[in-house]
Amino acid sequence: MGAPKNRRVPGSRSFVRVGEITVAHSLEIRGSILRAACLAGATSSALAFSQPASANEANFDLTEAFDAAFHDEQQQADSAAGDPVITSAEASAPVSAAPKLIDARLVASQFVDIPVAGDAEETLRYSGRVDAYIDIKGRAFGLDDSFTLTIRPEFTWGEDSNGVIGLIPSNTALFRGEDSGDFDVSVSLSKQWNSGTNLTVGKVNVLDLGGQLPIVGSDGHYGFQNLSFALPPSAVIPNTITGALLTVPTDDALFRLWVFDPDSQFERTGFETAFESGVGFLSSVTFPVKIGGAPGFYALKLSGSTRDDISATNLPSVLVPPPGTTFGNTQGEFAAVLAAYQFLQVYPEAPGKGWGFFGQVYTSLGDPTFLDQSGFFGISGNPRGRPQDRFGAGYFRYSLTDELVDVLAPRIGLEDEEGVELFYTVGVANKFELTANAQIIDSAIAARDTGVLIGMRLTTAF
Figure 1 (cartoon, helix red, strand yellow):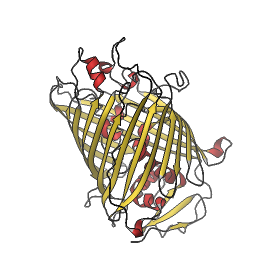
Figure 2: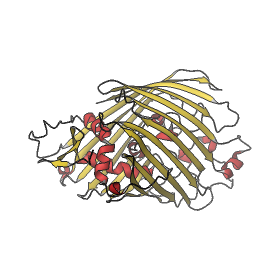
Figure 3: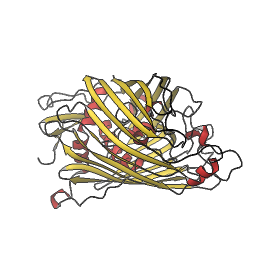
Figure 4: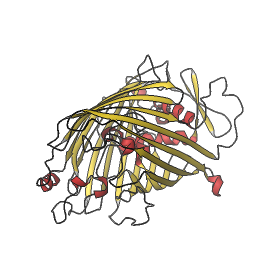
């Protein structure tokens, strides 16, 4: 099959032929897909070196590669926003000359889980999370439609199992700092240029960006549940940031540059103590590669900040050193990540569906960063017989910085934390997905036995 060819019709929507299906996707969706590749370098970290592409693949179009690889995600996003997939027969029908003024969707998940092995008490817990995604075009407030105002409220409820077995949260959707509330809202303004370059300024929930990662695609509502895979901890970038995020696509690679406040902005506007702890940065480059006709994305990320103390708001209290200790007094931090996301098989009869592997490795200079090394790898995708379903299996290992372990030794014995997660999602009906999840975790708390947590998740999108 040759590279897909683009066909444009009047209006703000472009049509891309993939196989025998013509997919309609908004310019906003295309922008999010381009940002997803940069994010492969922004929130992940293992580079698997592969053989060079053959000569006839060396100059394949980057945007078309994303169209093919993320056809699945485009359908989900359009469906959630109320925009149906348009077939080739319908493509010639007239379309509105202007995009929607307001685009909104809602995603809600309910969780039940219970520890079935280890030291944790076998208590069945119920909890949930709901997120709203509201995009308002620029003409609503006196600008042109290259501007988008994004409003992101979120709400959680119930009792979760985070911290019951491992130190790394086992339920990403319910990850909060200790003593934090259940409601938050993020607001940001984006400018999109015709080249695909995008600048976002404001308060951003990083978890949303993690959900766009190729193959992994986990944001708490979908995919893996453990934070190790969904939003790999870097100990540098908090879960919610205030700053400026620049994405620049080129013919050969995608680049990203972030400048942000290194303190978590959860339940804050970002202006209360703006950059009081220093300035954080992230830069990444992502390269597309084809192996056997299947797309892959390989990334390098560098991050750091000028802070000179430990990021206490991102840690459980047991890991915060007591006052007067030597850890957390070093000026500045720096970390590097290598990442790989490679499809191994794609299904011609189900465009955008397939499966592949992912992985990352991470290292930092240590003090004041509380993680020094980590890594994970796994597989995820869609079974060929039921492409509406999804599966995943992964292994992770995280190492606390040696100096921090030594400082905390009189209080608690610590070691590396490692674990395995397995999940299977059944597409039970339109907009409904039911996921079974199992996690086996050897906690960083040395005194704990290896624990097993099993659970279910029901996700609904409107």
